[in-house]
Length: 563
Image (tube, rainbow, N blue to C red; front, side):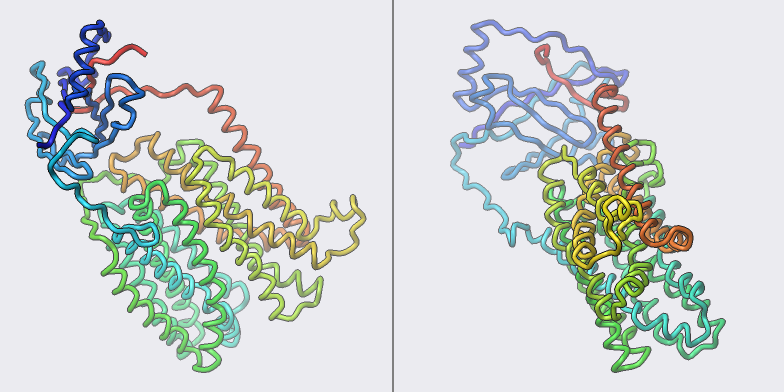
């Protein structure tokens, strides 16, 4: 015979505010009676509901009852429909219309199973795990793997040969730079659209549509060498922009899915995806250059676009169904910037990707001037930083998930400051320590430090933005909040990707590479100081916010003792 816990639910007052249920008192006889009820497998449990989250706790001896605490998440499709309570082994339908009747003081009772109670029923078997993931989560993770590798391959494959082809066509370096910059410009538009309308469009649709746009743009790129100069230039910008739009559309939706599916392990999974991005970034120029050399201009585009179309079908099978909800409000991701943590996280992302794109566009010239390196050695040197980033990102992601109150951003920005000062090194540092010229050991050490600490600076930004969205309550739906976070994150990434070549080019022409690197390093140090200051201010000056129930059916509070 299944034994159950008796749960009491008290209605809230008609004006929508939480009723004062009074103080809790219990004499010795009542305490003995309640303990006897517990021994027999039955105990009255106060119930609390806020929005779509339901939890309960026992009133009794905390030492003997600590193992019985659980949380429940019911579904509330509409007002008046109270869904069901879902546990690990039981589902109990609820028809609680009178419980939430604001016009009457009503109390309803229903039952939930007691953990550890005697039962004749066989427990439901737990779902089998693969590498620590359920089948559903494993499918989502595989989709992220496919997306990360294919998107970055398409992004980086043209770096080795397209500038040469474009120069032969008659484009200037500035025009070629605009072609590449169109990727990030269109990416900003996609991130803002997806961040605002993700739930209305549907996350799965956004991922597949983004992959489709990217694959189609690659095909268009493959036939541009047959056109004249002006059409070549215009269509190159359009095709590259469509690639950026598709990539950011897919990534914005995918990150939202990751936050929703993996919850407390989401940052670790994102760190793993950054490892895949690093691998794809290293493979892209090699794959693109090899296909171009052996098959001509169109070959890399046709091969990569065909691969993306195939993997798009695979992701269609793997990703869980995500219905669109047209009733969700449209809120811009920029609304998150009302929170100080989100502002600092956004600045952090912009600065980190500004540094990365600055190195990608200027480091090869510095290495050639300073050490007279061959193109192959320059490529290997630049890959060292990507390799360090790919190795350390999952570690930083795990730390960010495991210890929510961490100082990773401060550690990461301090490491970036040290690396940027040493990579030149800065002229002031040369004069202080009598360094006449950069040495290879110091250069490689600085590159490794930079790559290793970039992940430490970036991983906490996800958590900070999610917490900001939760505190601001800009959206009721968690998925909508995750969409806003992902949209703002990818917008900041694109801004940094644009800023690096533009800002770096201006500063290098005026101050030189060494001092420009040091100036960008000082931006990291300044961000670290701002983050520490924000922590101190929030700890000392900000009191916890007490949120009152303000909507119909907002909460139910039982009689509880004074704290």
